[in-house]
Length: 134
Length: 146
Image 1 (cartoon, each protein chain N blue to C red):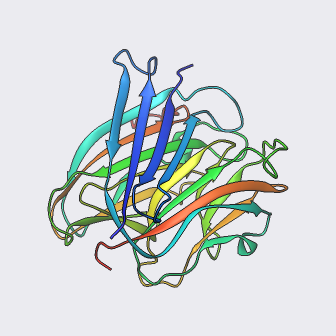
Image 2: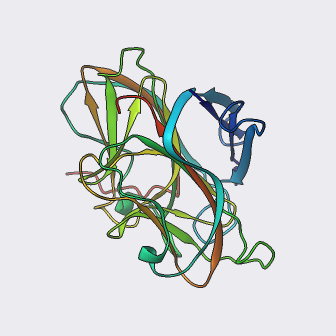
């Protein structure tokens, strides 16, 4: 089965007197359904921008990135909220920021949606179902 | 102000035949609505017994912030090496969002908009150990009890 390898690197030379610098990777075995890297123009109504459908307890890894533009070329400073369907807030992306998190509805029929705080925002996303405990 | 960068890469040699996946994203962690770097960092390792919900990190009213929300970023990794019966449920307040199995990690900008938006973790299967890091807006000191 296909493997997905996410790697995070956190670095700061001046946050503490001891330099912060570490990387961590994971190896995930991916099954259907999955959506590879995609783009969406997000508006201010979350229900219009569902990027992960309700999956009833399937472990799914979600990647979301604010491109900093409205359409791939015009810059925007607006924030983009990441929510569960039904408008439960998870986090907020400023331009250029990204999410990487595991999602499962835990039996509840909810998905993941995006909602612009104002105006259009182009967002990059993907999700991959994890074979673990499916 | 401190400058902290987070870089994510996602790769796969065999997700699609003939088309390896290679995604890269990098962000400088800043206070909400401004370009100042975050100055508060807390990191550590905690072992937690199964079946109990724990709050991770500060509440919104324990941090200073402005603009849309209070800026916070969270990294959590489940360092257990046990089988798939061991995992961490993570969520916001009483809403469970996902699971971290052995070796899994997550990184998110957290929407710390109010005190009902706290990060919660609940180990399952037995004692799980996590390592974590929070990058926050400025903490507000609370008045000590007399």
